[in-house]
Length: 61
Image (cartoon, rainbow, N blue to C red; front, side, top):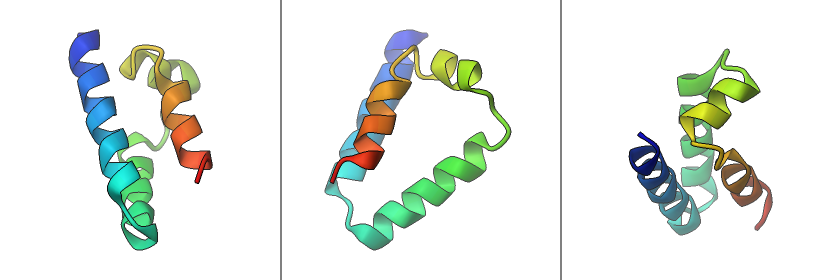
């Protein structure tokens, strides 16, 4: 459900925040491989509408 998805997202974001440049590159490549071919609505559903939080985390230093 959504609580599990949000928990996974928060864990992912914590890992992202703690990672350096090389680790972030690895995290992002894994994310792309895992979600390749998914549409925006599919990602929104998977992340329970929290996909914006994820995207903001990617673009902010």
